[in-house]
Each structure stands twice: as C-alpha cells, then as structure tokens.
Image (cartoon, rainbow, N blue to C red; front, side, top):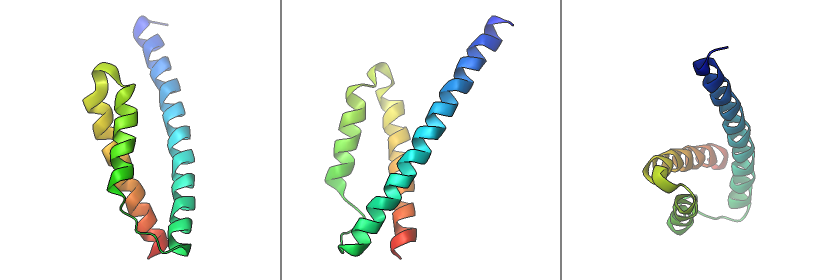
Length: 87
C-alpha cells in the first residue's frame, strides 16, 4: 500500500466518524424540534448559534474559519430539519 493509500484510509476512517456524529446530531435535532413544537419555542436561537460557533472555534486552531463555515452549514441544515418537523 502506498503512502497515499494509507492517508486515504485514514480519511475514510475520519469520514465514517463524521458521518456517525452527524447522524447522531440529527437525531438530537429531532428531539429539540419535538421539544420546541410541544413548548411553543421558536426555531431560531441566535445566542445558541453564537455559542456553538464560539465553542467549536475554541478548539479548531488554524482551521477556525473552515470549522466555522462547516458549523454554519450544519446549523442551517438543523434549522431546516426542525422547520420540517414543526411545520
């Protein structure tokens, strides 16, 4: 196996971890949506979004901007999923 193949195997392992974590997060988002629906809570919570960005930025090092973009996408997707559930 070449060095490139070794690196790609590691990337594949990371992709699996990311996928598993994202699916777990989506299941939690569904629980959040159910709570919000049952308690008449708005989907958008800008202070929570800022908190999430601050938290992930704190341990992203040199990739802070990339991670911020990723989490903005994740949170937008989460809001869409919540909206689908609530509406």
